[in-house]
Length: 125
Image (cartoon, rainbow, N blue to C red; front, side, top):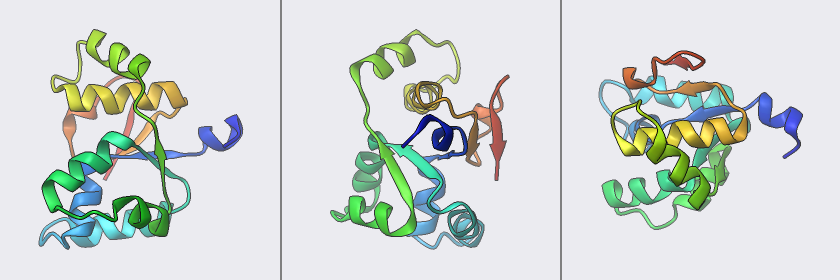
């Protein structure tokens, strides 16, 4: 991806993908709509794939991500170190997502997690 394309990307949090995959009663339709509208311009960490596997036991998640237009960004030791140094959000998982966003130059996230209501972050849901 070129830098210009990265700046047009939107990060998608694990919870939104989980709601989509499980057709969650309350958030499933809204999550599906976000994925349909932003598909092809979405990115998430490879951490998300692992978390989704733990939650759903699905083993074809990379293919699912590709099919719905979610790009994967590798979790690197640098991103992990940066996440560990952050004070917010409180959970390490969320700090990893935020660090991945910063690494990619993305400031917009689709998430229903208010822990991402931070300066410089545009949260939509």
